[in-house]
Structure formats: C-alpha cells, structure tokens
Length: 208
Image (cartoon, rainbow, N blue to C red; front, side, top):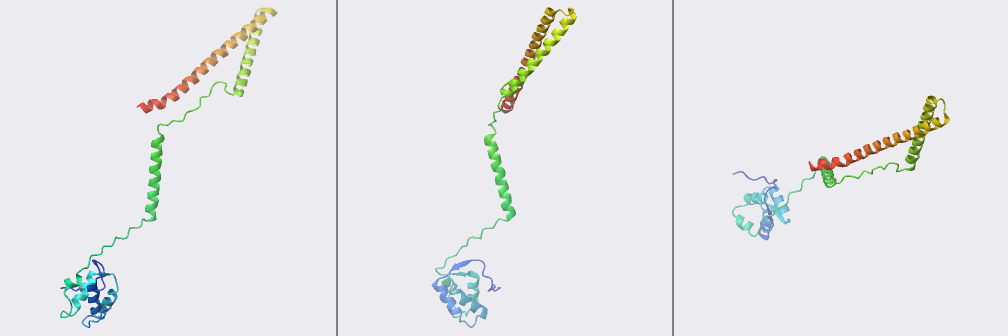
C-alpha cells in the first residue's frame, strides 16, 4: 500500500480535537517517525484544523504498539469545508459586461419611448413679420406690373386713349390680383397636404 505524501496537505480537513492534539504531541517525539513527519506533527498540534492525509501519514508511520486506535483519534472531530475562492473577472470580461449593460439600457430606453413621437411645429403662413412684409411687397409688385401691362396694352390698342388706357391698367391690376390669389390658394393647399401626410405616416406604420 502506497504511503501518502506528507507534504500534500490538500483534501479533507478535520477540526482539531483534544484526542488529535494529544496524538500529535506524542508523535512529535516518536523516533520511529522521520524528522519531516515529527516536524509536521509539531506544527499541526497548535492548529485548529488538521489535513486528514497528513494526520493519517503520521498515524501510519508511528509505532503500532503505542499509537491509539485511528477511530479514537478521529473521535469528536468534524469535517471542515472551505468555500472556494471566487474567480476574479478579467478586465476584458469586465469591459464586455459594461458594454452589454449599456446596450441593454439603450434598448430598454428605446422600447419605452418608441410610441412617443415628437410633435413637429406646423408653420402657419405669414406667422412672422418678415413673411408678411415679403408677401405684401410681392403682391404690390405683381399688381403694379399687371397695371402697367394692361395700361400699355390698351394704349396701343385704342390709339393712346387716356380713359381706355387707365381702364386697361385697372383690368391688368385686377387680373394680376386674381392670379396671385389663385397661386396663394394652390400653395396653401399643397402645404396642408404635405403636413397631413407627415402626421398620418407614423400612425399607419404603427397600425401595421
């Protein structure tokens, strides 16, 4: 039968009792034991726990005629279980966990706000003083141009008759105003359709 290695203290651990300490005390002076085992016995007798393999190696090497029964040596002793040392996470693993946590937080935030769509401000026509002034100048220039075109046209047609030339100018002014009004209505209608399509599109996708 192979003898256990005295230097190997791994394996089962026993709590030190009076019977174990008494045996180790006698074994530390047992000349049948090697110097190494006597030194181990001397060292273990002052400890609160004793490795089973070392204790058995000392018991096996001691004098059979004087050594106590092995069960008597172990009497009253309990096994001592030690918790394994927790594995330390590597720096690479820590960074990966941080990135995964950030990704999970971003996904959770996106899930919370996915139904919330920012309301876009609808720009009303002529909502600013600059727009009103620009539109007014544009209408005035168009009407003035229409008046000049009508005046020149009627003057050429009716032999430079002042009354008819003025009537032609007024007619051109009215026509220019009507055209400008029509263009304004068309532009406003298109803007309304664009705003309506933008506000309707998210709702349609959501219902799908």
